[in-house]
Length: 284
Image 1 (cartoon, rainbow, N blue to C red):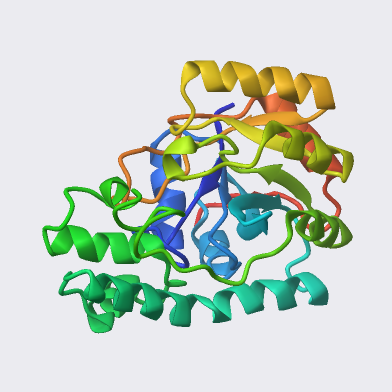
Image 2 (image 1 turned 90 degrees about the vertical axis):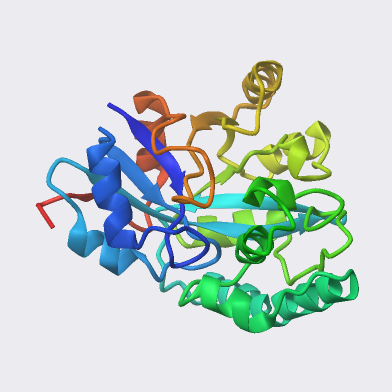
């Protein structure tokens, strides 16, 4: 089985619609794909309706969190999307995205970049606006060569000149809320240092004690040594280890299935979940 547990669609900051994404996943030879848009489940219905025969959909979301001033992302799988407390927190994060993005546009303009809110809104379309949309605007303007080049201290990284904080969950609260909704939590790309400051490994151990289920190890932003370190940490504190592409369509260079999750790990994630269940494709 080929299993990719971290992808994004136009419901947040990917370039493929949910329907296009599941068709692309099938074409890439995947057996299982998780749709984990940022702080939203809005793409799940379209993905289900278009799901090709032979492909299984795992519903999820990537939750924006912050610990001791450091941003981090928590992948949540197979939770009940209607659980009210978790739904309310997702809404708070989403509602903060527009004013935050507008503030980043303002900072960029102060730095001499002729970006406009209208340009960013056009790029975001119906998706939850975020930094990748602003990064795409910088590419369009010729300020940087690629979206990843915008995520530096010069521009949009967590310590960047144009960075603006947003409402984010405490990760311990996120774990509690996802578990209450019957879901499973995996810390996304925990040591992706190129994105900015990462939480210390001691914090990962504390999250494990609080109920974190796993960490994303095999990821394009983790080199070989980092993956080995994370596997050792996971073994020490009893965490599952996953692998995923973090696919964003044409917005990033990674392809569906570039990193995958072991079928036994996937089976354990499904076993632990009680809020929702994987959706087998019937030929959408």
